[in-house]
Length: 416
Image (cartoon, helix red, strand yellow):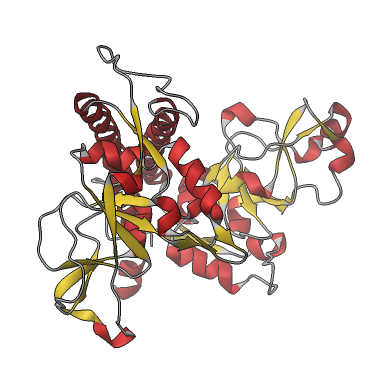
């Protein structure tokens, strides 16, 4: 009874009750062997036959982040190793164990330095096996048979005796279709998140004046007034973050502080990303509308990242690796948040970075930066536009993470 239960997954589709069987991959496929291994660079061409390499196989999918093409002559020489639609491939060096299934669009595909599983002996859904190889159980089994320290390797001969667990073909197909649908949703949300991030990046360039220009390239209808330029130091004042603290002062207490990473990552600081510290009246409390700037980073491109605080809580301080800025004029806070991350302002910040292994920025120099401001009404329109974009990006990012976590959990429950 125990062994039978061990061969039944926790979650199953209705109508399936039979125990799963243990099978060696060599009993499932007639052909398990290596794709071409050797020097291929002499056969590379700009336009030719797409050549599948290990870089193209990751996380159960074929990607086209890097593409190489081979000429007709070399392609024809590989004819006996052409991959057919439905064949399974596995990375054998580097990120070993990652698999993918050859789609119909890549039928008769030549490949390099991959393990190929071809010509099934029994009814098998290769996508079912592809998802099974994404489970923690099989990842550990693969890891146990890899060799090498710096670069991991796995042999095709080892995979012939590698044991997997399979169900009836109908159940395999149901499971494969389910996870394929889940993958499609994950990809859709990731692509939409990337697309909206690109839209945001482009408009951060176009909706704020470029250096040396008086108005931006793109404006909402109805706004024609000139923009004003003023130095940050003329329209606000700076304050310091936490001081006089030791390691033991952090992690407890009734007060909270805004972390460096919170400032770095968020145009508008996240009130849920705070850490505890004791109440200390000697420290500067942050107020609604305050701006924070990071003062150092490992690259000049990342210094002077800004974040605006839009909360009214008491006993909130700023970390010691940032400085604060309090505007003395009326300004739309959302506009301020995105204007300070616009391309033109980021270019000015990068020029102020000083250092070799680590780069720092002087708050006195930051205060000399001239910023452009339109009328308050136009500020509100711009701030609202970018806030809406950020909300959409966050929604897709959360959905993406939710679906990824769901997939990870279901891989545990729907496979043995």
